[in-house]
Image (cartoon, rainbow over all chains, first blue to last red; front, side):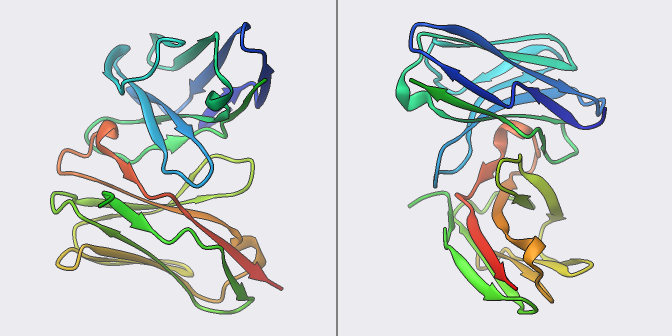
Amino acid sequence: ETGVTQTPRHLVMGMTNKKSLKCEQHLGHNAMYWYKQSAKKPLELMFVYNFKEQTENNSVPSRFSPECPNSSHLFLHLHTLQPEDSALYLCASSQEGGSPLHFGNGTRLTVT
Amino acid sequence: QKEVEQDPGPLSVPEGAIVSLNCTYSNSAFQYFMWYRQYSRKGPELLMYTYSSGNKEDGRFTAQVDKSSKYISLFIRDSQPSDSATYLCAMSGERNYGQNFVFGPGTRLSVLP
């Protein structure tokens, strides 16, 4: 397995459900990110982790909760989401100070 | 004014055409410039990565950066139907840390056989 892997690829959940998105990077990078991509809007940075420490929380609602147990794995825990949270959630990694972002294929989330 | 502007398209061209995709930006501190290609139901894939002004060529793709005009371009020669995708420009400042990346909304390109 190479690159950045995200699971699941698709997720449909009700507003009262709790679910988690998973990301794994096999590139040896030391930084990982969660982005939200909505139709016709620029990518929105949600969270950044450097060496497992959260360094950025871009005013994201508390119904999104990130977890980074090590530099290769990143989770996004979801609870009591709203329909407007439906979007493509992208995980990315990079080597701090010297490389562009490398993205996974995303999780398409639909909140009903 | 948005930090990065990009025409969302859609842009339709015949196969074999030369395609020009463009972004303008307002922050003169940007030093690193990237183009990503995103196919439907996939994540963005890095196409070109350049530093400061000038041109960079990779096969059928050429990236141009004009910092004096705050304008970047991606040219695709001999376009193919497989080039049909959304193209995102991205840029970052001197420290090139991931949290400083700013993306355009993307231009959707269709290359017709």
